[in-house]
Length: 531
Image 1 (tube, rainbow, N blue to C red):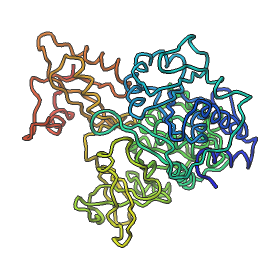
Image 2 (cartoon, helix red, strand yellow):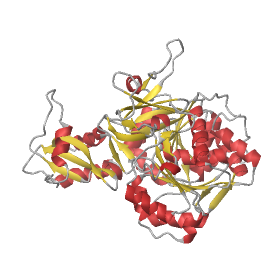
Image 3 (cartoon, rainbow, N blue to C red):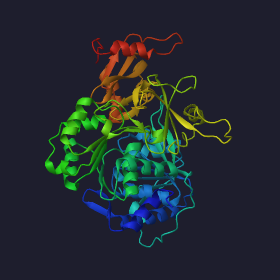
Image 4 (cartoon, rainbow, N blue to C red):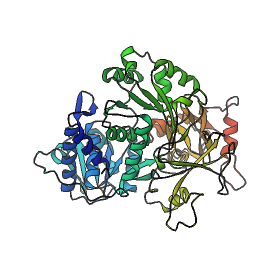
């Protein structure tokens, strides 16, 4: 019986032990070898006296050890917390503090960049360094070990899986909220396994597939590439995205059959020169993380004439939610489709009643993919995780659905179309970005009196970030100094494209910044006066 990720590997290793499981650069690991590495990693984590439910953060690029660390956590009954490798030290520090991480798995260069942050994260007990350590990195409250000394010891005896059930916590994925710092979405083993089964079902994944994992493993769709591949017994090729032609090269080198991306990535890939070798094996390509421009979709269909296009919609709080059947793409290319297998998607009015066709409402997802809420945040959890509107009153046990905050509309045949967001979240480069997180760093510069971050529509990246500020010192103000500080403190995808200066920012009657008025002012055709 498959309960957790460790069971996926065990089942595939039993079915075909020599089949390739993971490839990273020049190294390919079979399912049997991956199973053995997973058991050694789990034993090593237990030797660090971790308890079931303890959090282990993994701050690495994509490599074999990254996935082994994820699987070893699952086998040991711990909770893995994948951290996006593009995040800066302050964002990593927030994650470590927020969920009281006890073990950090990282590389020597990343550890060096984190030293100041780690000094204040008192829950941290151990750091496992993949690759060659920097040397003596001992600290007062945590110990530094070589990954190989802890997780690859031949003498470490394999142990039985921890006593877990499928509703236990498996992972915490951090995603931006509408205000402030990122929040941790808590996923159960059941969420991960049901998600892998559902996605692999509609994609038709088999052991013959070779899936290129380009998206970050801290992103629900990126993690899904690994879980789906392991569920199907397929080969997952781990790719650290640098430039578009690397993707083309890897598709040719590994005869990739499945590739999932976000719109900015697909727009770049559509402009590449694809060789016959890179295209020959492609069975499907899939989009998530925003609307794919119709022109880009047509380019991709011309590049991959034999591949089925899957247009998908998902939210971290429910992993995956909808997909558009490839047979419907020509008829309704702007649709996000219908519910994936084992999910129920509702369109709900503000009064809680179900919407009819053509009537906009909030997308509500119910079923086994609904996550366990936000880590250590009961208020926001209560806002987003509520009973579904069609729950029979005779059923006395609770059921929670996730209320997405996304406004959608369905047509007469039940196909869904994305309309917009209820909140001020910015969607750029496939990421959800909190305006508050950008604004906080802007205030910390001491150069601005007021700051508002906005997302303006952009065909290539979804939304372009613009920061509107009023200076503290008008005469000596230099917008480039603000932008440079943001570059130092924020990952690249969160750095505003423009810093716009205003003497005063409009406010609503309740005293809040009027974001809608600012957005109207900055739409194309108006003079935004970017600096």
